[in-house]
Each structure stands twice: as structure tokens, then as C-alpha cells.
Amino acid sequence: MNNSLLQVKDLNIVFRSAHGEHPAVRDVSFQVGREKVAIVGESGSGKSQTCRALLKLTPKIGRVSASQMQFGDIDLLNSSEKQMQQIRGNRISMILQDPRYSLNPLMRIGDQVAEAFRLHRRVSKGEAHERAREMLEAVQIRDVDKAARLYPHEISGGMGQRVMIAMMLIPEPDLIIADEPTSALDVTVRQQVLSILNEQLARRQTGLLFISHDLNLVSRFCDRVLVMYAGRIVEEIRADRLEQARHPYTQALLASQPRLRQPLDVLRVPTRDASWLNGPCFRNGVAL
Image 1 (cartoon, one colour):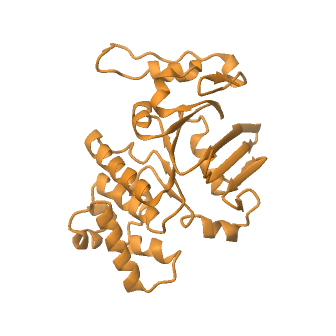
Image 2 (cartoon, rainbow, N blue to C red):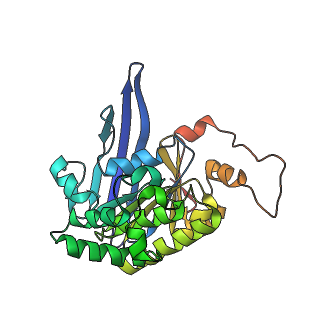
């Protein structure tokens, strides 16, 4: 892949407990350029843990190992906590699922966005607030001056997610990790938020790792899709060819979705096969 931002090879994450060790991510390898890459799969498949490991946010009971975890010229695997503090938010930003739990309830919206800028840039408060105002306008928030004075509990879910996007984009990162950023929004607001995010990504040539359960959404919004099952990537495919997926797990996920043109009384539940745990994976229709 040309102009690759991120290269991950043989990533493994194991959690320890009183009952032994439990692998959460197994031999995961992928690359991300200045594109939109989705990671899909059921809850517990390892999507979020994979992305959190990139920022060294794995809980202490977890052990992370990899052959390579390279971000540009930075070796993420061997970076110190001090180095990671310069990367988090500045070079790699993360948009979380629900702004109600991500925004500081005691700070006004404008102050939070300005703080996100000042953490990574040596600028005055006045300059930071002006930059925050410009960023809030960029994510299409109406009456910016009024919105900047509000607290998180005074804004809607859709506006909250736009504020989160503004906070993550204001340092102008190279890569954004979005962990189900629209799952708490209704369909209309979701489309508006995704349209804004897409516009800002294209304008800044920023890469995106997009975690989601919604295969219909990622097939329209993303460029490539990584499908995870039981901690490993079982299929990698172009998003516009998702319906042509070869792995039986991906096919089962597609078949379990509700479709307006094919109404069903009961949705199909994927029937799992033990061979999926360690069987072949598929890349663009070819078994590996």
C-alpha cells in the first residue's frame, strides 16, 4: 500500500486472570493509509482492543506483543509513555462512542475544544479559542458563540458527536480511530455526522480506522473492511465488494441483517463453526 500511515504485524493481546490466560487478539496484521478502513465483527471479537493497543491503552492485566507496530517513523510497540503522550491526540486521535461519557461535564464546549488544541500547540488562550470557534463552524454547528458557552448536558447527541469530531480534528492528526461514533444517534443525524466527518477527512488527508457493527454503513462509507472473529481477522475486502465476501462468518453477518426488500419474521442467527477459529482467512476473495 502506498503512503502507508500504520503497519501492524502479528499483534497479540492476552489477558491474565485467576483462571489463566485468555487471548483477546490473535496474530492480527493490517495496514492503513490515508483512507477509511472499517473493523467489523460481533462484540468481543477484538475490534476495540486492537485499536486501543495502538495507543498503548490496554489495561495492565493485558499483555501486548507484535512483530511490528509502526506508525510512520515511530515504533509504537517500544515507545515510552512520554512519547505516547506526544502521539495521543496529536498524531493519532480517538473518537469514542458516546459524547456524554467522553466530554467533561464541568467544562463549557468552547473551552474543551480550545484545550484540545492548546495541549498540542504552544498558543495563547485567545488564539486557541479562535481556532476552536473555526473548528466548531467546520463541523456545521449553528450559532457557534452560543454553542461554545453550553455544557455537555445542554446539547443533543448529534451536536455532542460533532463536538467530539472537532476536538479530535483540531490538532490535525494523521490518523483517527473512531469507535462506533454514531451508534447512539438516529439514522438522520448519523448520516449528517458521517458526512461532516468524511468532508473533514478528505480536506485534511487524514486516515481513519472505523469500528462498527453496521455492515451496511461501512460498505457505503469506508474504502476497505477488516472482519474480525474470535480475536483474528478472517477477511479483508474492499467495502464496495462486501456483498461478495467469501468467508462463511462474513456471509453469516450479512445474512443476519434486516433488509427492507426481504422482510423476515425472525432474523437469521450465525451458526458458528469450530474451523473458523484457526481456519484460512480471505483477502479480496483469495484464501490465505
